[in-house]
Each structure stands twice: as structure tokens, then as C-alpha cells.
Image (tube, rainbow, N blue to C red):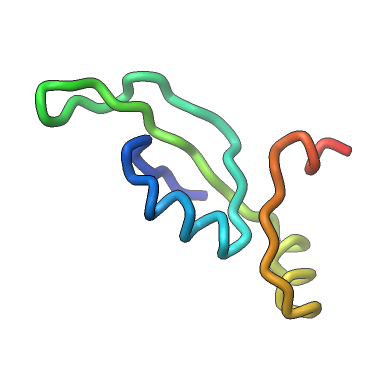
Length: 68
């Protein structure tokens, strides 16, 4: 599990490419540059990581896809 700042779009995309999905959002959890920013909590399950490594495919799953 990890957290990433909402404005960090590059980091968010990199973690998604690595297989992490957004689990939740902490609204206005940090204050920087005179503004509040959201923090996104992301994770990847061991089974998802293992499947990704086995197939060799990089995929992005949304929260709704995981719930299926």
C-alpha cells in the first residue's frame, strides 16, 4: 500500500502502470503551496501482482473491476 499526492499525476500513472489501483481518497489531507491537496491510497494484491508477472502484461484495473 502507498499514498500519492493528488497533483502528482506522473506518479499516479506510474503506479497504475505497475498494477496498483486506487483504494481511497483522503480529501484535503495535506497542505502545500498554500493549498490543500488530496492523498490517494493505492495498493496491489499479491495475487494481482503474481498474475501480472506471470502473463507479462501491464494492466490497469479500476476499483469497480476489482469488485466484480
